[in-house]
Length: 67
Image (spheres, rainbow, N blue to C red):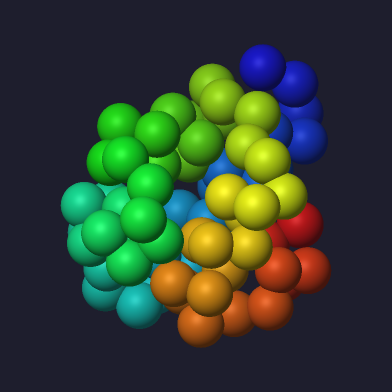
C-alpha cells in the first residue's frame, strides 16, 4: 500500500496504544472488524472516510488528528 496508508495506520496505532485500547476493543467501539483494524494499522487497507470517522470517534480524537 502507499505511504499515506502507512502513515495513517501508524497514527491510528499510536493513538490506540496511548489510550491502552486493544485492536479488538477499538473494533468493537468503532463497529468495524478486528482484522480490518489490523490491516489499516499495517497500511494494508485503504480506509474510507466513514471508517476513519468511526475510528476517530472511538479514540475520542478529531478525524484530522489521524491524518
